[in-house]
Image 1 (cartoon, one colour):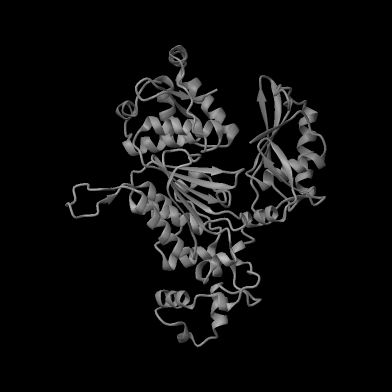
Image 2 (cartoon, rainbow, N blue to C red):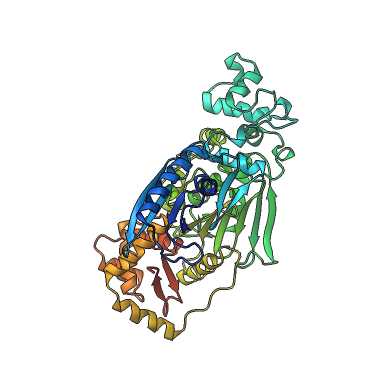
Length: 494
């Protein structure tokens, strides 16, 4: 994210911008550019020196805790600009000297005053975990002891009485009971008799729709799934398996068939939703089944600064380490980021969408192999930033298509690559060598197919190419316009 400043204004105002970037995902302040018009004005040598000094003093003296910035001077068309890089902080929340907490919201910033949002910043830094807080009014009587006994038998191979310690002390050691003698939220959610008595919003709202629109009024089944995390997982899986198709796939007539989506995919993604839920965000997990897809919508965006490309590679940060530990020992959950990787190996098209402003993480598992339908849906999704839009954009006219193809053939690959790299630099994003090859190929060959790219590129595979195209579409660097027969690829390089 980039913010433009014509010149250094005051330490107080710049400190607010630094705090907002450090509390969000970091960013860049570019000095020497007019904010409203984007006009490149540049800075004099004295302005460069003074601005650099003021920035250092601001970061050291006006922001608490202190943040570390990196500045550099860049030259464009004989004009010089000062670039100030601010990384996402690890000690959130950051504040100004006046005690103000700011975060970025789009291109603007806003002041944070709500306690829940302040706690969320502490949670992002790992200094606070909502699952460890006490549940007011709860006690050991609200524990389902059969669940605790099963846990001890499975994990330690003996009964809880075999430890010769008081029950309360054992529960405290597990993180199930707090110092106050009340249950923790993790304890209630994993071992409680009636978890929703205390955590009313913690449930799965499962709906199987007729058609593909979330706004549809017809549904096949709708239910609220409540209970402990293991119970909700079992019931959620039962709901999914009852709504999906079982195919024979060469099995004998008496077989129940093979589930249309591999069970491991559903297991890993549903478990992730339950284990990584944001307990500061009071909302239910939504499990939505449509004719062409399944959606799992989890309250809480990706945790700890993780991005979609990180989790695709197996990166993991635990928002609820206690719950994750319980799940790793008693469920098929393994943690360590391996679940997403296992799901992606199953040759199923899966989209991950981290919706920052809505504070939710959405997973789409496609039931269809119709690439045109998927692309139309994705275009609707990204153009309106919401998955609820069902009106698909109309294909470009033949004239516009011909104009774009003619323009693409006149460009050289170096110009296209430079343009892409400039966009990536501004967005602070990266692409792999394969993804760059995909972009350059389709930029010069807009009407080519995926198979054309694979045949023209040494070492390219079907699975790797599909994954690369999906990732580039998430980044909005590659857009499919039109259908399979008459459509074409648009590469963003300007």
